[in-house]
Image (cartoon, rainbow, N blue to C red; front, side, top):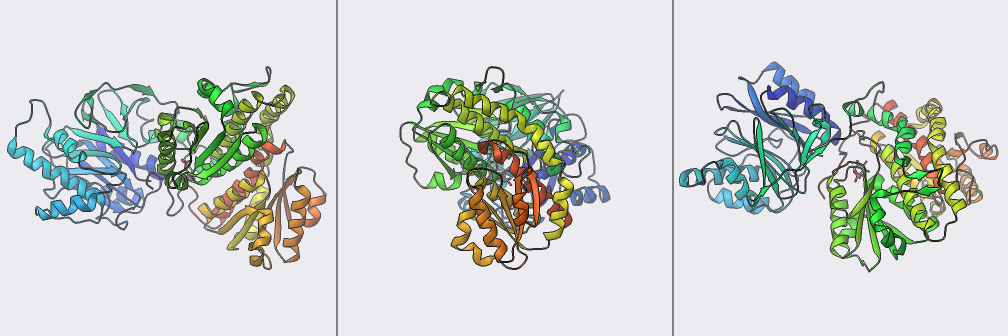
Amino acid sequence: MCGIIAYVGRRIAQPVLIEGLKRLEYRGYDSAGIAVIDGKGHLHVRKAVGRISVLENSLNTSPIDGQASLGMAHTRWATHGAPTEINAHPHLDDTGSIALVHNGIVENYVAIKKFLTDKGHKFVSQTDTEALAMLVGDIYGELKIKNHLAPGTSLLQKSVQLALREVEGTYGIAVICAAEPDTMVVARKGSPLIIGVGKEEYIIASDASAIVEHTTQVVYLNDNEMAILKPGSFRTTTIDDIAVTPVFSQLENKLEEYELGEYEHHMLKEIFEQPTAVANCLRGRAEQKEGRIVLGGVADHTRELVKAKRIILTGQGTAWHAGLVGDYLLEDLAKVVTEATYASEFRYRNPIVEEGTVVIAISQSGETADTLAALREAKEKGALGLGIVNVVGSTIARETDAGIYLHAGPEIGVASTKAFTCQCAVLTLLALYIGRRKFMSQAQTRETIDALWAIPEQMKRILEQSALVKEIASKYCDRENWLFLGRGYHYPVALEGALKLKEISYIHAEGMPAAEMKHGPIALINDGMPVVFIATKGLQYDKVISNIEEVRARGGNIIVVATEGDKQIRRYSNHVIEVPDTLESLQPLLSVVPLQLLAYHAAVIRGCNVDKPRNLAKSVTVE
Ligand code: G6P
């Protein structure tokens, strides 16, 4: 969603900010803007609707006067007010001397706006953010008149502090003021902000991807904390002005991991990275020699996991689909009552969280607002709150009692791919970890660990079929309705296959349990409708064959993901994509790969912007 990049230092800020905006593009946005303060204390603002290139062109054709080494920029994903230039950030107060960028939502902005309008302030946009910029400006004006601040206190800092005490909602903000041209104030509550600490310079961003090319030393701001930055020095306090000692961390990911390399799109790169990502995820955890699972991140909670009466897996989008796979895995392998639930539903339904409940938040970004809220709700009710997260240092990772990182590397493509397979891998590890301590034999544990370690090579064999999948995609990508069907472990995979197609190629697709088709959706099947079955050899194979027959009889085009060497299924299908054989419980790790490729190729053929699909955001940080 919205992205923030800000610079305080001695270099010229604009190129750093524009480059940063490009790194944040993947989060999803509809407009962008920049504000800088030049050496003479002039504040310059420029905004544009659409891609960063539009803003860049505007800056190239009519450059900002003067050299500025302090500034901030923003990508906006509209929540309050249409995606227009006026609504784009940065927002100014009505004196035009204070500029503010904001991620999150000011929930009480209507009340703030009314209060300020009654005082005579004039608003120009429909955004909640302008209310905050105006409030900072209003307080600044009043403090200036009273002028009784302690020596050394910045008026801007004090104004931001006082303004934020009035705000209900969430924010990650950066604020500058023409009258204090070497100062920037940043603050956070519920929306991430990271301070990259370079040599006499600071790069502040909502996402590490915009920082890593400048420095790997960072300070993660915590909720209700702020920082006051000047070239060469910064300090952190709480919103209530209590000094906070900054904790320095190192970013783990390297710049290359954020680059496209030889690939045309991040999504394709990430699909092809899956063998490595899954291997990284298993390394040091699935020990083949000893036949045991090591999960250092949750080791301190082993007893609670083994004794758990119920496990609730919660997340949104693809992460929820991984949760559904986890539901099957944990009941099947660990014999624990499990439920996968949308975080957005869980948090508001006043959930019953009895003693012995473990809630596991699954999230690639670790920032999804609903998932975070569900985790907080569960913890509030006394559950042990664990996390399965990719982004190290993210909010969910920091708020959980313990957790397991994916180690999948940065995922830039909006449509999640390698995070899904790594989430499934981690959930398998967790199921084995618990299962082995309950009923699972050493032999079954070993067998599953060996099968897990075979997955990366097996994935490579599927990826080699990309051209075949592309052919299938090109044949049907003009059809506007698709069905994805699977049973058991393949039901979540069917959901995920349909979601991928919807997200990036804008084709309407439904995923469901194959048996459910007869209870309604079968009425949709008409001549030539593409129906994708995940029908690998396993417990429910024969039943899926019957479902295939039913669709075939009604003229549907059958595309099947089947087990390598399955000749029988070819008789019933128009197209077969083969995946290597593995244990039933591990099949989602393989069967999802052709569906990711199918969606990717369909989107490219249809001319869609694969990495930046319309209306979507990589990380949804508002409810
Ligand atoms: C957004 C993304 C999806 C993702 C979902 C959950 O909707 O577009 O790809 O699955 O958020 O994100 P998370 O970061 O929590 O896994």
